[in-house]
Length: 243
Image (cartoon, rainbow, N blue to C red; front, side, top):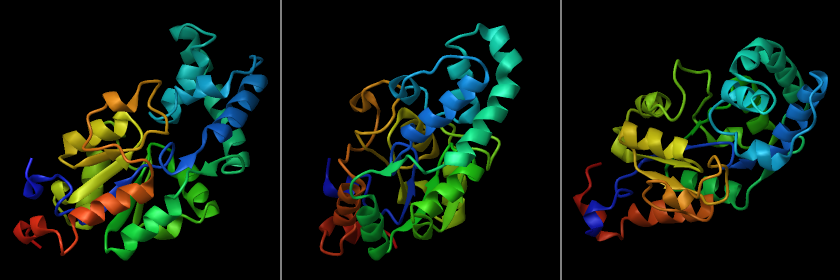
């Protein structure tokens, strides 16, 4: 591959996932889900079990949790009560147990300082995502934040990423997606965006190395350095890029 053909050349914006990419939120899920399960008369489950269920939105998460104890018909029977209990308990502890992954703030700062515009696109409902980002002092980095309930489809559907590209007024090939799972990679590929993945998040129990991406980055700071290197004025590949 020539330098001019690198998928990160010409990138002007980044779409960044939340759970498993910027924040380790499994401890929050663990507390809220087990409080919900206690309310429904079910035994507690482990954080590791929950980790493999995270990433496809709250509805999928709660159905997956209920399916540990119920068949499909019973899952639907108990779903509304379980979702109500989960949302109450999650909102009560949102962000209290979650932690930032290393170099998240440093990576976001480096991207912004380089003129890369930022969006957060998550499958988390906005009612959870917005206060969480504010609590962790991350909200100010992003021009726009879309949740799993912002549109009629969520990742791995490309719609949320396409909407972010529309917001930026940029073609998808100039907007890189950064995430921790196949949801992010599949959405990016379908939207026409380049994609980078981190190795430490939640990928439904599957190795991130099996996911189709344009590179695995150890941290968001590493991602920022890689993006900026391919968009530096000193990089000859950028002579061929259109503004």
